[in-house]
Image 1 (cartoon, rainbow, N blue to C red):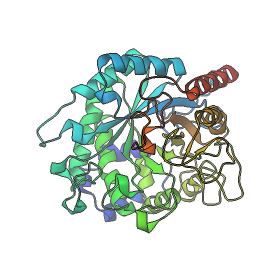
Image 2: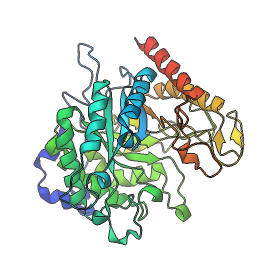
Image 3: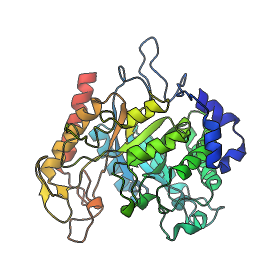
Image 4: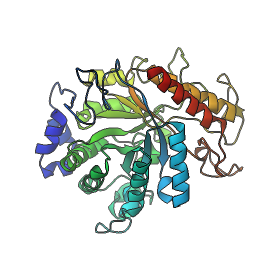
Length: 405
């Protein structure tokens, strides 16, 4: 219970924590929090099924759809259709952006919770869990040095972000929302517009985690989803392995319960084994894997949540039709279906992985020369027509469930 106790006793001064405070609070030999009950509890002696964070030997892989902010802006009919499809797929989780900018777009005294309330209530009615990704700063709260009006600017004041996160946890815990992801892809410039900064992200965790746990002692908090990239200073990328290691070195792993990761492997199948290591192999099979880093910094039992993986079916250039294809930018619908089917057993074969989310449910635009690759990861086309990957993923999940009874 170490992390929960920490959250209860740390004073409000932590909300403005500096990096020095992160290091001071980390201590030596920090142990992983093993909750006694609720979210994150291990299996009981009687063999009861455990929640997130349980040991690999008895864990059952869970499945989700990563939806971004699409659900928030759907009509009631569109939302019902999306959640009906999620049920048909057999997923139990929805990863949804909870954008600070959407809730408090103009001032610190403004609160527009209604659209997200609707998503949470609709998901609950369909028996689906919600994993909010809490991020995206309104202009009035953004770092003035960001030089951009982008919602991906980090907050100027971590205390303000932490207070918003606390209010979100307080509002949605009674509705059954207890799992949260703190920011999205903080290791790349597109989602951290001042440039990836492990110290600054560690300070954000130090401020936000205690605030959220003060409102919901059962809060299960995820490290912001790591983009699987190589370090490229010219593009503002820090590799997922380096960024996790730097945050861990600062002692900030004590604030989270799981690591969130985005291992896109296309055109390779997720199960592909290579001499150099794929993004999937970086979870636990490369020498500097995520699991190796967790072990090095005293968190050997911390689970990995794959909160995004998938493959796009449209962009400029040639589409890959097999895992051996070279110099391609996207995949054919047939290969996307193969990747979707393979994602289930490939994820199940990694002991540390607890949950895997497919990105995305629906394309963000019709196929046209001007559209971006990022708009075409869906299991369905923009008009709602299903791609072969929809049925492939549904069958793979059903087969896994049948095997694991």
